[in-house]
Length: 101
Image (cartoon, rainbow, N blue to C red; front, side):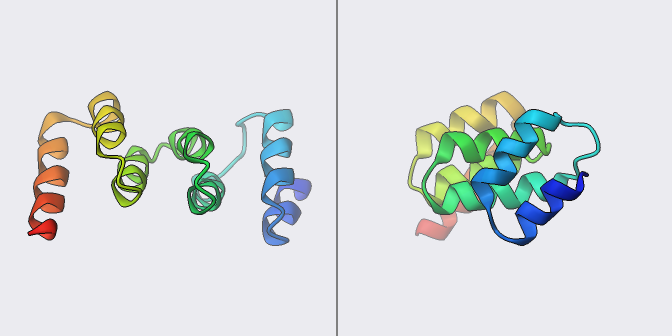
């Protein structure tokens, strides 16, 4: 990870960090950095950007959870369908369904 990316993340300059990632590409970037950016964009309700960073960090379950927490069940299902095994999809949605009862 570059010094500039690390500095932007530590300073919580998320937009700058995202710009740096676009310039430097994906080499030498730790999944944790992608997760931090995904978390930021999820809290600002920029779900498409959050999804992009979660997927770059190979965290498809975070995408599904984000959409469930946002009440966007159809998007959660679509994300799960494209990135999780069928058994995992069933497990996630059954657990969430039980939590609603």
